Length: 223
Image (cartoon, rainbow, N blue to C red; front, top):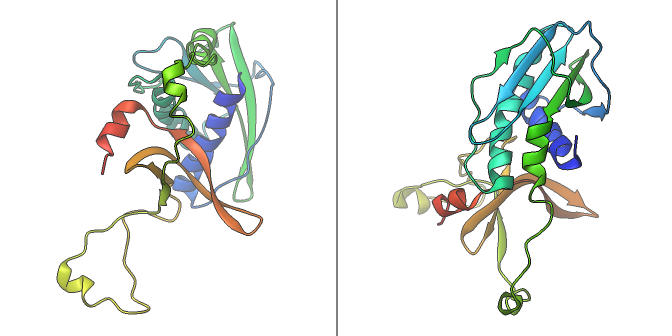
């Protein structure tokens, strides 16, 4: 399984378990094949995209957030392939395909360890690997590469009546439309281009990018 897909899966798993349990778990992973006694086998497919993702586990406990994480990968595939990808209804399977790349994930839900395997079919890996080689940049476009653009990070927005704005004083609180665990938006020239999480780097704030959004979604986020 390639590094981009593994990193996206870790991010989506953390977000899914955060939503389900209120805690963002640490995730360990490694390239392992599920043993034959994994009785839970589940496949997630996507529209406009060949191949699918799999879950293999010993039982169904704590598998709902994992299913949600795999379904949520459609958004990441949309950004990577620059076309709309949607998740289809997942389905239980009785057997596992032979040609599939597996990763074992280990995390803890409270004091309970959770271990399972996520696999990617060869067709899916081929589809998301086609854009690894960047397209050649026209020489006329190279003139724009050194142009500075304003970059800002949005923690959320709110609509406030003018009468309430006039009442704002030092210590007033304005409630935004995002929860604490929601990703922040990276905005360039009033257009949302990515989402991520806030981090600190040597005492300064930064943003770790989790998702670069598609062109279609960028047009919808123009402010």
